[in-house]
Length: 83
Image (tube, rainbow, N blue to C red; front, side, top):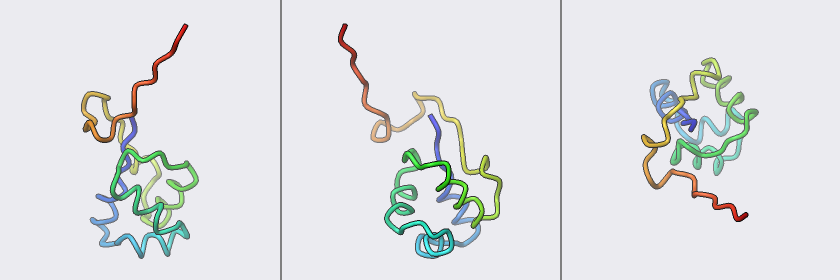
């Protein structure tokens, strides 16, 4: 599962939610969702815009995390299939 490192990197660069939203031209609400939930399903274009503002390669915002390491509140619900 992918984890977004937006909050950590933005904080290292001393860029807050409002400034990141303004500079990336992404709604505050979307940035807030990503900030609060590093497992939020963000589009590639959103991630690219954030990376540009933070002046890091896009790949630096992504971390591959094993499913068992993901906190329960962020795990995707199990999808049951019926045959």
